Length: 265
Image (cartoon, rainbow, N blue to C red):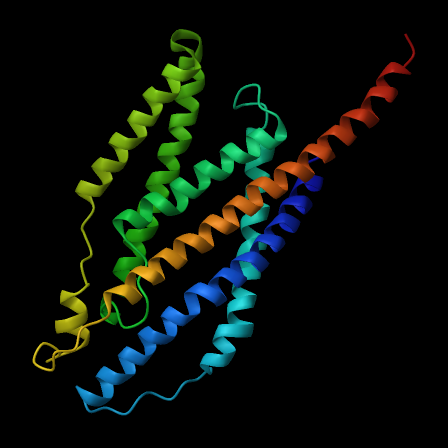
């Protein structure tokens, strides 16, 4: 059964990757182009440096490169989602396959992307100091791990609280516990504020004198596009996989029932 679910999860992830690529191409790429244009403008007019030669052209990056990345990410995410579903199915209460997939999709989007990105938001090119990219990446991964672990603990604790407090109260209690854990992470983990101070004074020296600032609308549209890509991919996997997983499980139970009833007594 797990193999069948894994294949279906990867198929759902493939569809999610295609849709995610479409959102990224239509909404995200224009903001990336504007950010790169700003970066090139500052390098030439402020730093008086010639733009670096592109190893891979922007046309290829925004087409084949972006598409390949979206498809690989979608298939991988769909496969992982299917494995988590196989473990969680039947352990989240009396939910159908569709309901389980929907709950997992919501928890995944919130814990893997929404909460971590509130602490360390996505930035387009020209924002952030290149010398701190390793540190920023490590902090972002720490935030993701902490959020996912907190969700897993909350799910396990909720099961133990059901008989004592009921479904609604148990859900509220673990949700409050998750929120408290994330607030603790937000306070304890160091912040990364490279917009606009670092972008102005670190990456773009003397930019204040030149009256050049990074367009805030580009920054926020890029972040909205990033959220939109994740929301589309997670919802596509959760809803699409829920449908095909439900059919797969129903077919498996239908095949198993005759063999059981025809067994000798």
